[in-house]
Length: 456
Image 1 (cartoon, rainbow, N blue to C red):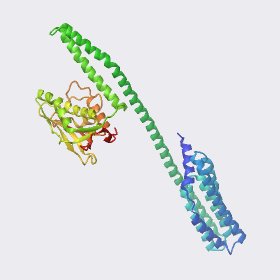
Image 2 (image 1 turned 135 degrees about the horizontal axis):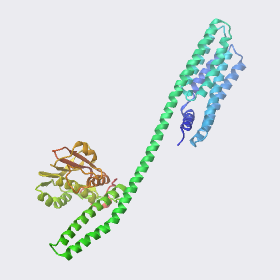
Image 3 (image 1 turned 90 degrees about the vertical axis):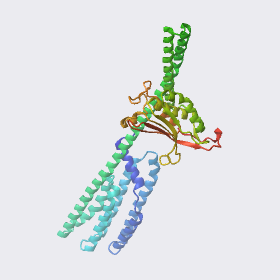
Image 4 (image 1 turned 180 degrees about the vertical axis):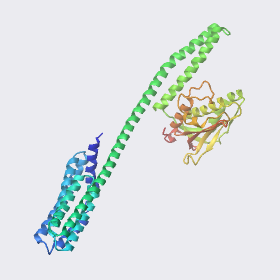
């Protein structure tokens, strides 16, 4: 990245090349009026020469800037353009200083007034475009006003001396105003440079963090995959011991515990592998039209017995026939399984409800949502933002076997589906998890070729 000095130089060069537009029409009119004022007082040859020199200086400046613009686009010629623009300002200042010298008449108050008005107007108009580079401003200011000040000072009368002093005061005030404007210009340039540096640093840190996250996910995927085989072998060895020892023996009971522990480890490894695949972006989606009525029937078959064993009422509000959504069926089922499983585990008594909701205000284009509501203990508001972080579990989510992966996986799966998860919960009032943003599918469309794209 360029240093601050380099950035300032490039900004000033681009400002002169693209932002400063020379007022050709107004300057031409003022020059013609000035030539008309000088017509009876200055030799014609001098007037023609003055007009020719002023026009040549302005044209040379325009040609120079146009030729430098392609070089600036290539990152070259910044200092040269600034020096050329400063020289152009000097030539313009000399032109108007020459006007004061040619037209000056110490005995004619109207002449003095016109010269002063002309010069002060040009100097005041030059502050804003030229003060970004003070040498360019001074190159215009000094040759414009100093000849007039010198002519007034040598006129020999107190009135002319006073006018010379007032002109000097005007010169100094314009110089001070230009310095203030210059500082404001460069403060803005520095702020832009610092903002660009911060943006570049943030982009670099973001890229590093994303790379670290991908590396971590790939590492977890590799380790989890490598651990699956030995854990499966431990489970098989436990089964062999249990069968060899016979029922009721200590060895058989221990072998059964080994099998159960190995099964739990295998489940957690599978979940780690699934989370790492989701985080690393290596999961392949297979979207299709999913019939919600069949999906709810499967959820009822999966969790009906568990609900009855706990004395809970599992109420699945069956969707209307033919209602379908575009989604990866395995991911959608996994998210809803996670919701219902958590609801059953964390509800001591009462009802677990699952049904369809329409939220057009939140999701105007895809208002279909699936809601799972329980009558459990609820979650404090301060813990809701942490609910989907991996490896977190809460005392009020009392499933002792939780390792904080379920909701993190569900959140990542919902993101893959192009959906979002909303949570509404409070202590003592239960929890409601809502999967929103599902895309409805026409009942008549059954082929994968008609499946719209799904953006994870």
